[in-house]
Length: 150
Image (cartoon, rainbow, N blue to C red; front, side, top):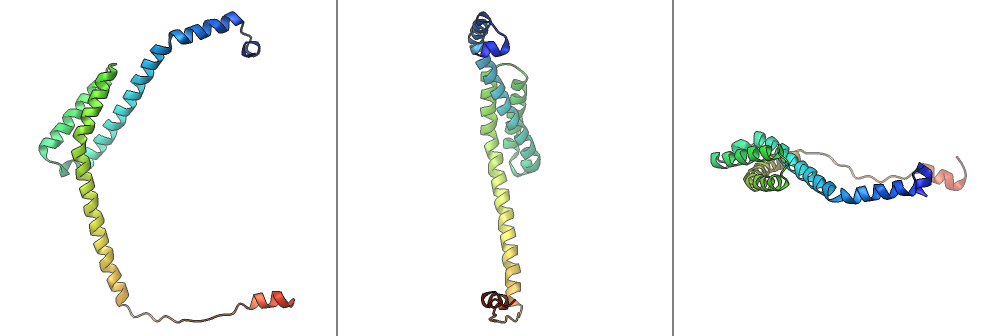
């Protein structure tokens, strides 16, 4: 049916199926390389960004280890070795954990400072003497609709 629509003979279809089967392993390896590269490049990008923003929050030894792992992964990404890319990606992820801890602590510190400032602001708002009036009301439009007089 597909062959009829595309104008392919049965022999052409069989040839295409055999070609696909022959190249399946090669395609799988290419896919694995592409996936490893994508994962590695994403980690390089996020680590670079976080290192610029929070690099001063980690010790010199940790920062040097992260930078070294970052460069090693960049070098591996230039090649075709899937296992090397995966290994260097893992190495960078391990090294960057210290950076993640520093980021977490910095964010917790900011959140704590923001919460204490909000708490102080809330106390001053309560000190204001506001007059609140409790009132009841009656909706006149509903009564007019029920009685038919508009």
